[in-house]
Image (cartoon, rainbow, N blue to C red; front, top):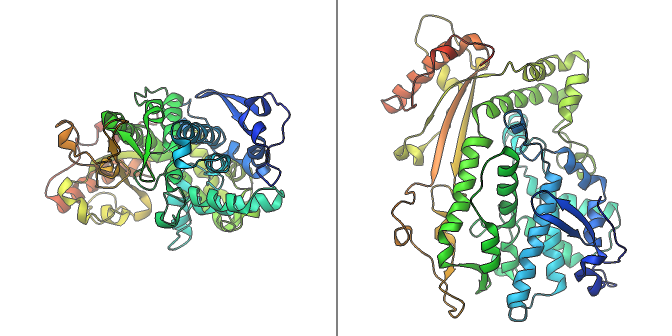
Length: 474
């Protein structure tokens, strides 16, 4: 994995500061997004384990490559990218404010490890596994990849006898959880600005986003006009919080807008969601036989689960997997669930929004014609926001005027531009027919549901006639 130069860095009691700082004593790899990445030997102890190497078998964007063929990058290279950006971020803070903030090599190594390991417990198929599959097979499931990442870190340290300070591992795990519901309280965190770097629970600006926004855009062949390098160069810590220059307000807004645009055009593309719905159905059918969800709390078994579970379903001849195999075969032959239509929930209804279900659509069918069943319909309730739900994330960000001022402040939207959005969240309802011959009946029922619920058809247009007549090549 790249060119290797001898060195012995392990932030244990025998930690060698000189070799940690010198890239000559590191292994280096060439990343197609960030160029040369230098890996210190403590990080390599984690990378060169079967648990971390598993990330090579997890596509970053799940089944998006079925629509954007270039989107085949994995969580492995993303994790290396976040490691590198975390390193760059904390090193710049040390260069500019190191004495003031008391940043030492222990802090730098901790942040780097948090960036490297933040996704080590991630499930297969992007977020489909935890958000779509597990809730269907485990009632009230609250499993999260962040918590599994923390459990996996402990498992890797114990299983591979990695010599590392317990205090460092404790802080690494806290940084991984910093933007989740399990985040430590900031009041109890020493140097809490360090917790803003990898998974920022304060305002959502972190190197995880910096990497995946640029990497995903590049892989899908899309432009990305957000320049994270500007933020890394100009950020500053005030009152134990990473703050940004006031003139960078629009740069930060571009980051959130780019993320929302990726959600709308890539992550929730109608065909991508159709494939995901079919994969979820296949996994649910296969779960009782393969026990896919049985080891989600056991790192020693969970690490063996990756995207190749689809090939296992596809090639196992057992009768118990017949329905699951047929769904995978339909995906291979592009005989997908058919997208009928979608609508955005009216803005004034968002606060009281209740998820639309297949039952809602079936119950909206008028008498006459084919009789729909719930199992004929698939519904996606897609929430797209700027990371803070209906709230403006920039309200949580502190800015400073210039480097001669120690005052930090927030900036209201209307002090910057009247062209910025006044709403920060969309809820899109997408409806699919599992059988192509039912597209017309389900489309009509979907329109009736909108009329019954809102008094108007909120979809942009009716389902095209060629969809209603279904052509297998659409």
